[in-house]
Image (cartoon, rainbow, N blue to C red; front, side, top):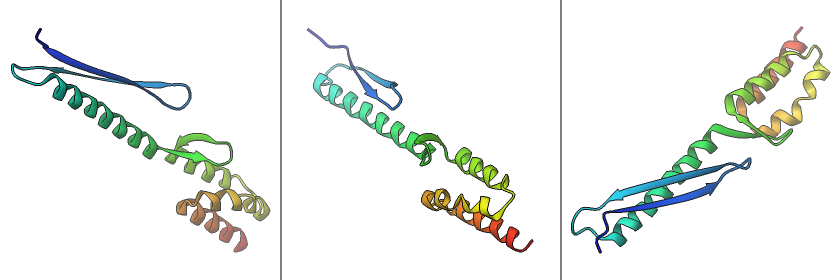
Length: 121
């Protein structure tokens, strides 16, 4: 018996009841080891998955107010828009806990600047 190809496939669970299937197929040349090809396929699938997870994590941040995942840009911009809607200093102060807990320096600076604008008239 002669092997001509090796296929390795794995299904990875993701968040929100979704999955990612990664499959690698390796064509074998004469005198290539089936076992070595299988190990290479398995290692390659794992590397693809790790890179995919890393890229996805870099795109997302947890919104601490509701545990909803959104992209970094949209979360920051959304909070800025809500801050801009405030017409009183007291209204701005309601954002202190949220903004400080995000540890997002851009949002912290933005809120402080808006407070200064209210204080200076």
